[in-house]
Image (tube, rainbow, N blue to C red):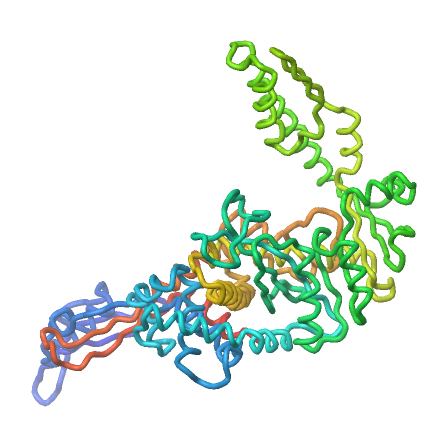
Length: 567
């Protein structure tokens, strides 16, 4: 008996079970059964049985003795290879270099403590892919110390890649809180995490115009923003060998004092913004004429206080509406708090002027609008009034901001000055990713100053790899792919996504109906690619072999996109 496959015109071929027999001197065939309804696997199994082979279940032949998540590890390693990242860390191979790269990969994949890394590695292929084997917590700490010593060399390599002579350099400062009280860098300061009373450390991030990180500096937790600026200028010019740079920083970072210091050095231009008080003075002096906004949403002006600078005044009507609504909501909420105090007085729970004053002082600035209230406190009374004229004066500036730059108009148009300032959103995005969304730089559990610095630098390097992966994966993520269009859009109007990006958000599907992912869910999808260690069933001493999951369409596309990364 044998199996024949007989072609059929216009339909699937027929699969027939036949036997051969002799009729005289002729060999003939007869059909015993039609097997067309069977699957190809079933037909192949029957074919092998007819050949005399013995079939047994795979589970009786082989057994899987270990399975480890592999796909997401493979993705990070592939991105590092395409970026030449391992050579950026150190050109010479070493145990420390391998451990640092493994920790950076782990910071992207499963951010946690160094001890937790060593436990998590047991369930992944990190030890194999990065060639580190099973490392101890102390080995990781030693590798961090090694990394910190190499920070100036690594940052110089990144600057050579991403910063250009006369190009934009973006800088901003953030903070993260500590667990513990013994680190010399830990201090009380302005908390951007909303953790009042927590010790913190400040760190400033330098990026290129796209928001790709180049360097990070760590400061004591009570260091003000402006004090950190000039060390960055010194780093860029002296350590990165860039003589001319255009520094972009927010209005709290690049103040008048810092601009005077920048003027004293050669090769420094800047793009920043004016504080509200300075804008109010421009309006009062008549230099900023509000009626001009009736015709356009931005225009240039000059003022003697800003000699050698161009000022670009902008008004965003949508932002004005948002701020007006927010102000009224905060005023209403504050009145609600004061009304609670008044009811306490009426019930006799507060009957002394001093006690009433303390209670009012506790709630009046809860929503940061105490300046708009006039409060009168009596022995058993409380009255307040909103300073309407003051509110109106503040509201007149709603939606208005003024960009300042030292660049000439021939070097940078008014529109591009505004666009360049708004590029700081890329640095803010980096901080969000490093602090909470992906990399979890906080809370900081290290106590030695050197380890804190190394930890933050390691998180910056992890964001460097993650940033390039995110850019490569834009076709698969909830990301706008029409980046060139942003360069010609109205710089003052609210940012808008392209129609294609909005379609991905609304449908949550790609054009071929596959699911759109976030960075985290795509990593989770890749982690479903596992590496299985197998051996012959029941043969404990037999050699093992590995079987890796075959990637599906989405997984394969994600890996292929990483293959296309170029520096």
